[in-house]
Length: 395
Ligand SMILES: *[C@@H]1O[C@H](CO)[C@@H](O)[C@H](O)[C@H]1NC(C)=O
Image 1 (cartoon, rainbow, N blue to C red):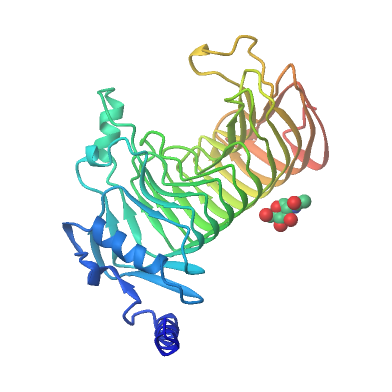
Image 2 (tube, rainbow, N blue to C red; image 1 turned 135 degrees about the horizontal axis):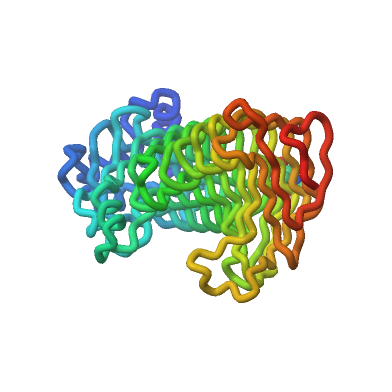
């Protein structure tokens, strides 16, 4: 590229970054997208993406999605990109990406909006609405349905920021982070009815260095779920509920799987959720593990199982011959957790008989049940407690 063109582009991008309402470097509308809610804009988005992704300008190339409602079918934004950073910029309010109203159009692809192998990706603003109602309805009545699609997925991406995104009514998970490194998710809002099946908020799998903060998640399954091979996770200031809480697991699905380590969950509020903080494993052989986990500064509001380790997961009692989990759970700290339990057992440590939990620590816990005393339950659980712990520890 001639140096003067490069300079002009850099200046234009600089201008765009200072004044985000200015025309973007790659506005999807100039690639043929129509924000009328009906026109299929998938190809236009792909053309804008590939233009941004192949820009060789140093610094950011931007795909800009202006106000409007853009109909998008399953789409894959792939890297690696020549640009060092690609920004997918949507207006904070007024930009939405909507799925086709017929759920069969997301088909069996498993993903709706997928970013794959992109290093240096930012996704800002916008609402994605998968319009999952008809799909959940199909699932509920057990008719033949498609496998369903996750709304926003990041596979093999590094150095990612997702900020200000809203996800509504995903068919299955709202967001999946799989095999990624160094991901920051902040200020996102996730929403689906509490009755919607398997609509996890954010699922993290086989990823390292993921921070999720300042986000509100109201959905029908786990607010955040953490799968095998994940480490160095920081979850902070999450408002969860309705939903199934924050879960590590289910781990131990496979005999051979990577463990989960170094996870901190702090300053979160759980409102009327099925669980608060949970570690869940299959009751069968596995070399998986969960270690160095910290849960602290949490508020529980009428939560069914505020603190729970459940190593007996085996739906339908299929494929769990000895009914004991091989997943090793150790060094889990619970500090400053307060509020109300919706069931009598506020702390439930149901650990594996073949691999008892060790190094569990309780410090400053105060959980009540309908203003009465709650209880704790232990099976194969070892650890210590300090400070005021109510209900009393059963270690
Ligand atoms: C644990 O994870 C946090 C948050 O991602 C990170 O800052 C810290 O360095 C990690 N600790 C270790 C020992 O890797």
